[in-house]
Length: 448
Ligand SMILES: *[C@@H]1O[C@H](CO)[C@@H](O)[C@H](O)[C@H]1NC(C)=O
Ligand SMILES: *[C@@H]1O[C@H](CO)[C@@H](O)[C@H](O)[C@H]1NC(C)=O
Ligand SMILES: *[C@@H]1O[C@H](CO)[C@@H](O)[C@H](O)[C@H]1NC(C)=O
Ligand SMILES: *[C@@H]1O[C@H](CO)[C@@H](O)[C@H](O)[C@H]1NC(C)=O
Ligand SMILES: *[C@@H]1O[C@H](CO)[C@@H](O)[C@H](O)[C@H]1NC(C)=O
Image (cartoon, rainbow, N blue to C red; front, side, top):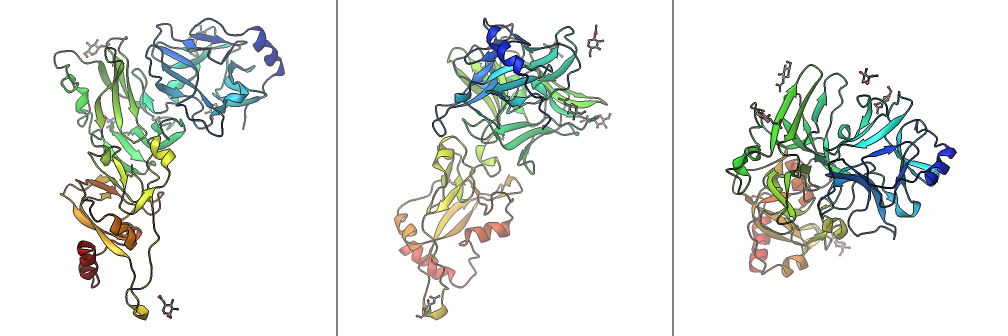
């Protein structure tokens, strides 16, 4: 990689010019480390090193450089520099402006992250702006910008930032969900604005599961929250933001402008693939979420992984099919349930009549099931699925009645979008009622 070699001279200057009082700027020769922060001049945003959750991996805490809302007690990262490369707390990372004017995170004698900007000024400064944008610019000319965090968004769109694409360079700015509630690495869901002016949520950049509808000049057709009457208790109050879609020869993008700068609002693509508008409620000291898109969590493609059922009214909304257990309870607890579930007891794969022996496997019926196909859940009231299970798994479940099961996500290989044929194969037990052995086995299930 073309990372600049850090100058050894810099090492010594870091100690002599340690960064101290809260300011919005970091000049070359200064370092930001430990609990030190840059704070935007309006006090709204802070930048510094943080750790998420209290979980640790291999007894070391992992640190990220990020931006969050400075005035609220719930740490809410709105941008992370090194999401995919967390830093061990044992190495005491520092944010510095390197000898070539670039912005880098430096730990021991290595660069662990760099903005990789092309600097054409002799002196640079990094500034945390009042709208939460970290800007690396010339120290003598504030319009000469080399890099800004708004160009590299993570899971959050802040008012003032652009969601869109550059028609000339082809650069597309996507909002990408995080891997789980503590791991800031990019996850599998993303949002982008297409050249047709529609926002689209997709799974692994392939399967689209929601779009915003067309821009009508004031808001997107499928985004009801963009009108004030949809924010609870605010029918009489004005909007919080102005929405704008810009389409010119250079670029197409969507952006929000806060009407009152003090409003704490952001739009987030959650770990579970929902586009969420969140407003900080100062009285309750918590986030209000006036809108989630898609509205139903189960409409997010593959959100529960293989051999799971997604239900509107279960908590959490994913649970394992009968006879299966959560593949990774750790991920599951951190809100990443895409790993799905695994079979508790292997199937007894003897043929049903060869040799005169019969499989002991039975079929468990699951009523009111809908399947996801091509990113969409069917609209009908659902069907009954028959799941092939080892006999002992069926016996355990005899008395368990299913509630309303609304969406089911089944996939054999999590990297492939399952077709119906694959769904049938992966279940091994789903088959047509017209097949000869079915009635007898079903009878066993129901009377057994
Ligand atoms: C710097 O320039 C190189 C080569 O022109 C380009 O590939 C790269 O994207 C530029 N970096 C930034 C941050 O603009
Ligand atoms: C400041 O930078 C901008 C953008 O690069 C440039 O257009 C402008 O001429 C510069 N102003 C001065 C005084 O150098
Ligand atoms: C954006 O502008 C181009 C060129 O004027 C036009 O062809 C295209 O339809 C516009 N897109 C939207 C979403 O308005
Ligand atoms: C929001 O939009 C209205 C109507 O277009 C305009 O009058 C107002 O100045 C805008 N406010 C901001 C903060 O952009
Ligand atoms: C069929 O019977 C033979 C002899 O009893 C046995 O070795 C074999 O495992 C049986 N095959 C199956 C599929 O059950």
